[in-house]
Length: 213
Image (cartoon, rainbow, N blue to C red; front, top):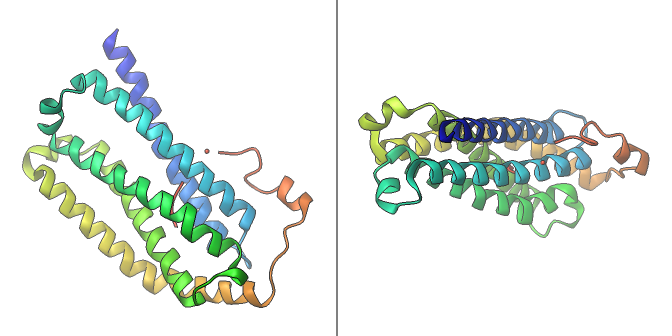
């Protein structure tokens, strides 16, 4: 019976990962995939990432409970598990930062307190961290054979490399077009009509990151 319960928990965990990946993709599309920033879609994608993170935590903690009984010695003896907990903690912190700091500036750049170049850079960095973090979280889900070879330090080194690569790509490929879009939004703010909000592409859709959790 325990194995059956664990199987369904793993399926729920994978579902949360897939939902998060889809939400991050929709968020990127809302920022860069249209002529103007789609605030409705961006907001829905942010909430979707938040729900996916909650699902990831709940299902992940349940799996840990089944596997270890929440015994600290058993948890600390699993380097892959420790790495995944670290990555998800960082994703959660990044998600709060995105939701509280980055998203309001993107949704209404005309009221941003800082220069738009800074707003764009901040969003690009947070989004890059989110994309790298979710990618590494997915990788850790299938990396059990590498645990004896890499250990916790090795997994975290891979995470650091993934974040560094994502930051470089975001600075070169995301920051310039996002900065241009924010300038256009400030010059001619886009007003979302009630009917547009009701029939947006994410209406009734998914449950944030990133700039990115």
